Image 1 (cartoon, helix red, strand yellow):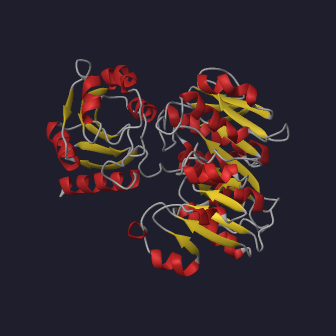
Image 2: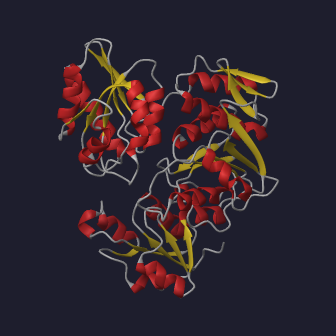
Image 3: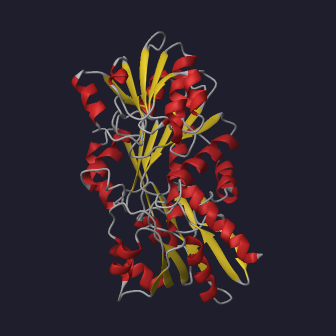
Length: 442
């Protein structure tokens, strides 16, 4: 893709937008950034104004005076300025597509998407590659923008990408050497026309693959099965229950004649077994030694805010699962424990059906503590099915769960909702939870 002297309009001043603007400038292009939020709501706006032509407080027709428009993933494609850009036949791409066009051809891409488990899987893949001596970068939805790395240079062996459905919306030529969908469950239904629309967007990850590339699916995921005919590449499956390309049995992952013991792995639960199987399949084309993989499985640590053990207070154990922003994540959390737990749920809703959790809560929850904007919705769904209590303030709900607890109890923050009712993101919510638990100990 020609960058020098070309004009790029960048929609959004979030991490990927600013990184894309910097990359355009580095490669000799001209970047203009357009932000819907007011200047006072943007961190360090003066630095941005010094570095780039930009506008705040709305998208004007200045954005249309560019050759290419790069859209940040949080911005829906149906906003008026993008509709006008389409009418003018301007090239509209995502930051992921932009980076694919400028990356060095020798760098291989491993891309992972799914409703749950993406961050753990890409982090494990990245660790295995580094342990094998490869030069690998980890980017995308996990927090570091793809464009923030020197991807145009030839000294990167692997680019490991976590991709959200938002990032896969504007894919034209992007192609991964290895692409995987871990699972597809209802999520972001406030963004998409339907669940099927959301699922089809996920399948864009395979859009341009051929038989020379590897595609990976979860054999147990019924939604993925419905769309698998869209895949034109070398398709392989992982499974808990069936003997397929890679499967789990008797505490070990079986991959052909290879056997990986995961009883000593620090990440637990059936969802993490799926993540490990996917990771092993993803690196399988690259001749990595079995003992390197085995060691990575044993030493890989759980990521923050994903079933993260916090500490024990007076015999009560606390776990931070703030990243559980949908019902499927909560189901995984409940299935990760052999004993019943006290679970804290609630936040900003995304249009999900909480009733699907009732059988799991009945089986695995001692009591459910509700908080956040979804208190009333959840209470209506759970009343008469599970014991629950509604407490408005976040700190108060944690204290109440602790007061109710006895030695040996487990308290888990697993909200089934986003954090935007009270917090900037799930990280801030999780860190606040950990801080409150620390004060309980004091």
